[in-house]
Image (cartoon, rainbow, N blue to C red; front, side, top):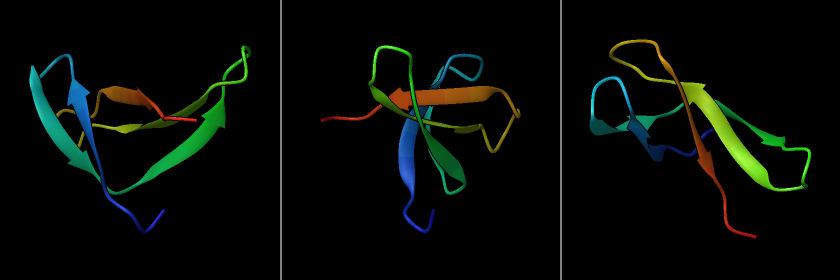
Length: 50
């Protein structure tokens, strides 16, 4: 993805901007962006609007 997204990292307890993420569909058909925190490497995700 070329677009940057702001997500919340639970481990750092702060909002972070990620550039590399992938959009996946959950089993209840909601779209979600999944990526890694740039500082600590923890997996972060964010549900996207419909």
